[in-house]
Length: 464
Image 1: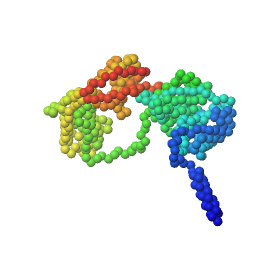
Image 2: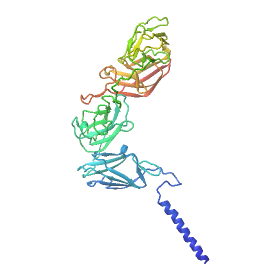
Image 3: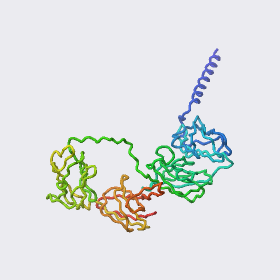
C-alpha cells in the first residue's frame, strides 16, 4: 500500500512538472535570466534562394533564426524596380512572407530592401539594411550608382528626399510617370543604387509631398541633371542640388471678409532695449491708418529737433510705420505721437498723446569679425551670409580675400557661402521648365560665436 502511494505521488509530480514546462514552451517571450541577446536576426533560408535566377512565382518566404517582427514597413520598404501595387508582406514567428501583386518583368533583377524593418521580438535587435535579391533572367544585375543630394540654399542634407531613376529619357517623364528605381538618402545626403542593369537613366531627387512619386508641385523639393547617368563607374558620384521653385503655400483658407476694426487704436514697438544700428524701428498698429501726420511723428533728438531721414514710411497695409535713418552710436532719440496725428477708418485715435525715448547701441555693443578667404575668386560673385535660427541675419557680397565688419550683433551664427551667379546678392532658386539650376551654397562646419566688444578672426576656404 505504501509503495502504491509513493508511486501515485511520483506520477502526479511528473504531470505537474510537465505542465509547467509545457506551459513555458507555449509562450514567446524574453528569457528571465542569462545574458542579454544583442545579436540581430540571421536569415537561415529563403525561398526562392538568395540571388535566385529564372524566378517566375510571386511568393517569397524568408526564414530567420529567431522570432521576428516587422517595424514601420512604410518608411523602410523599397522594391526595385518599383511596383504599381504594394506587395502583401506579413511576419509569423520566424518567417516573413511576401506576395508580389504585380507581374514580374522578364530578364530583370529585383531587390527588396527592408531597411531597418526586421528586428527580433525579444530585444528589438535590428537587422540593418537587409536586402533580398532575385532575377527573372539568367543573371543578377550588379552595377551601382552613387551620389549625394544637398539643399542648394544651405548645402545641408535632407533625409526626407528620395532619388529617382527613369529609363524614359523624356523631360516630362518625372512629371507624368512613376520612376523605375528609387533610393532613400542617408543622414549625410548620400545615396546608392545597387543591382542596376547596364543602361542610361535620367536621375532626379524629390521630396514627394503628395505621395504621387512624380514631380507634381513646384513647391516640392526637387533636383535634376540634364545629363543621362550610367551605373558602373565607382569613381563618379552624382551631385544633386535640391530646391523648391515656389514657396510652400500655407494650409489655411483665407477669409474673404476684412476683419472688423478694433474699437481702440493701439500700437507696439519693435524696440528691445537699445536700437540696433543696422536695423529699422517699426511701430505696428492694430487697425489700418487713414490719417498719418508724418511730420509730427518724425524722429527727434532729446531737444525735440527733427533729425535728417527721420520721417517714417507707411507700408501697403497702412498698419506699420518704419523709421530707417542712419543711427548715430549712443545717441538718444525721441518719437512724439500726438493723439491727433493718427486715425483709423472708424475715426479712432490714440487715447492720449504718447512718446518713445530710447538710445542707439554703441560700437562696443557689437563684435568685430575678420575673415580671410583662401581660394577667393572675385569672378564667382561670392556672398557671405551669417545665419541664426535658419534666418539670414547678415549678407555681404565679397570683393576681396579679406573681409571685416565691426558691427555684428552678439550671438552664434552659421557661416554660409553662396555662389551668387546672377549677382543679385541673394540665393536664387532653380527652374526645371527653363533647365536652370539653383544657385549653390555651402554651410561651413565651423560656427561663429560673437561676443560684444570682442575680436573674431578666422581663416576660411571657399570650395566651389
